[in-house]
Length: 134
Image 1 (cartoon, helix red, strand yellow):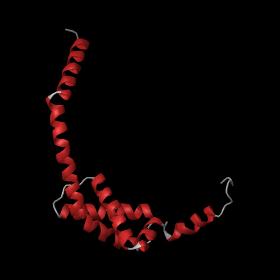
Image 2 (cartoon, rainbow, N blue to C red; image 1 turned 180 degrees about the horizontal axis):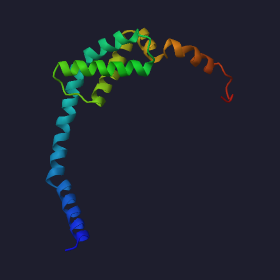
Image 3 (spheres, helix red, strand yellow; image 1 turned 30 degrees about the vertical axis):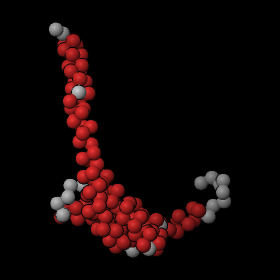
Image 4 (cartoon, rainbow, N blue to C red; image 1 turned 90 degrees about the horizontal axis):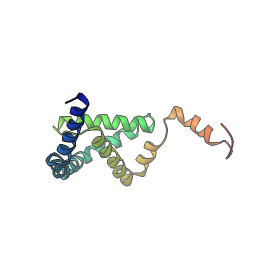
């Protein structure tokens, strides 16, 4: 058999493997993974609310605040022995933000505003007439 023929046959076998028993195993594990992520989110939510509320008063812009919150929550998750990837941590921070905003609209306002140094330039940029080129 030639190299190309072997390669084609290997690709066929790989496709059969992925669509066969392995594919079925992945389908069966998906709900378990989703429920595990949901459990981790539920465990991290109270800490996420506290972290988001604490960071809200800082002088960082909103994206930096969110990055800091994700990093702080990641450290908290690790200290609790929870396996949480970046997307789970980001989701927990976003949920924490929503809860904190519902409890205190002032928290939501501080997280959505740019930092004090960028506020003047943001305000200046928004004062241009509609349709004006920048």
